[in-house]
Image 1: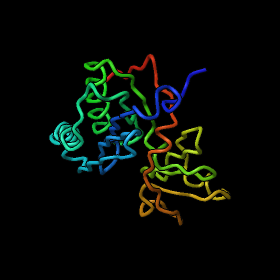
Image 2: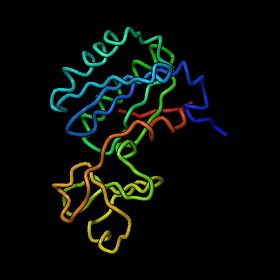
Image 3: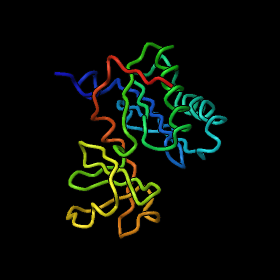
Length: 186
């Protein structure tokens, strides 16, 4: 049985770079378990090809960290902006390959999910991505009409019925299992 990243290494030595460029606002987060700290850089997704590497470099400088100090790199693999996701994935894969670090792929709704709820990402054509904590599905809005669980959305303004604002949390990413074999062909 594979270990989660918290079980995989000493709690006091974990440093993880998290890259999520799938949504309107991209994030690069440097999380240090031993210090109990996180540093976060946000940027407009339309500029991420220009600012992602600089944001990561700034995180490293502010925390006196280098790429070789990291234990893992987590990358968002969508759903979301195709080009944005591709930029984040390729940046993460390149850094991980160069430093021989394990990758942790995650879907874009995982950091926003709260157990016992449904997390939604609105799409065009009366559809959304729906995540229940295990399964990510593309469904029509009409299939949610009889749903009794609380609904949270990354952007509630585009969902055609009442939902609550989902908030970003690292806990769900930290509970993931690193992938020994991970490949996205872009």
